[in-house]
Amino acid sequence: MAIPHSIDTPDILVDVDILDRNIARMAASVRSRGLALRPHAKTHKIPEIAARQIAAGAAGLTVATVGEAEVFAAGGVDNLFIAYPLWASAGKAERLRLLAEKATVTVGVDSAAGATRLGTALGAAAGTVSVLVEIDSGHHRSGTLPQEAAAVAQAAAAAGLQVAGVFTFPGHSYAPGMPAAAAAQEQSALAAAAATLAAAGFDAATLSGGSTPTALLTDGSVATEVRPGVYVFGDAQQLELDRCALTDIALTVAATVVSHHRTEPGSPVRFIIDAGSKILGSDRPAWASGFGRLMDHLDARIIALSEHHATVEWYGPDPLPALGDRLRIIPNHVCLAINLVDDVAVVSGGNLVDRWKVAARGRNK
Image (cartoon, rainbow, N blue to C red; front, top):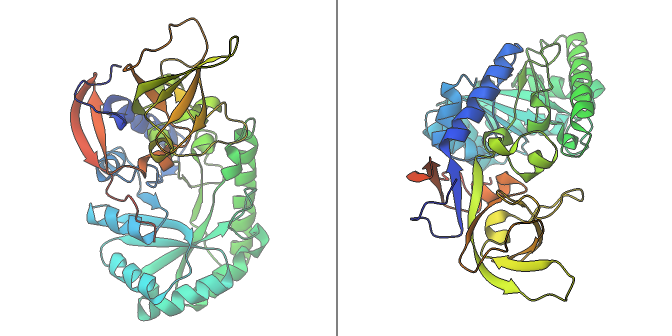
């Protein structure tokens, strides 16, 4: 796809035809396995994309913060899960109370203290908010052990909250060779936690898992829903993990070659583009081949980032891009890139057709 002439660089491009295909494919795959789909909207933060996901059959959205939930509720989404163990301040509790007047709201908890705090802060409105107990299935970030889920659920119920089930995030799936193992560990942890809750008298109706690397590997034998996010756009991490194809990449950063960097004879040729960490994001896992990939030149390597520069080493048979040439970059971690811009260019067939506001950008609390 050519970069539309009206685009100035650097800019984020979203190919709406690929986006719609990604949304439809994930919805159909999840539905065929008897699961509900609750996409994580922190990836895109854009109400127009949320509307497309809901229209394709998503049961609701996952978000990371109360602020993101407020944006999507204002955009008409009426079922929201805040997948985070909030420590409920008075301010957050009041915002949750108001949010629950507009939408069905579920919040993550992973400790008895956190659940008690949430219920106490909500007061008389505690019964309007449900909780899912977060389980650690191997990522070792937040989440309690499966066998400790009942204690958290009991504290939540005692605080007046509705206990809807459990959830986990298999974030350790974001590494080579790990998606299948992480998916299996996710299912095992959800099953163990559900059994723990059942033994304590709770009906764990929702068993929520799934990340983009594992969502297509999760079946309905244990889990009831999955929460992938990156699948709508794809990114360089998913490409290098073989969890998406190049034809699935819907989001790229348009950049211009602004400088040729002199190197020693025999060293790889280098050039500089005008897209740095302030639009690509700076994530680079230890296993990644660089700070992103060039969409049409996969042999190239982005070896360094500054705030407004990226250094590219050029390999392969293609001629070195000239000063002023425009290239498309696939960010390593698309969730970071989208949060660095106010709006995105929507393209179809190489033409600019719209601009969408990143409405939940910066809504971090």
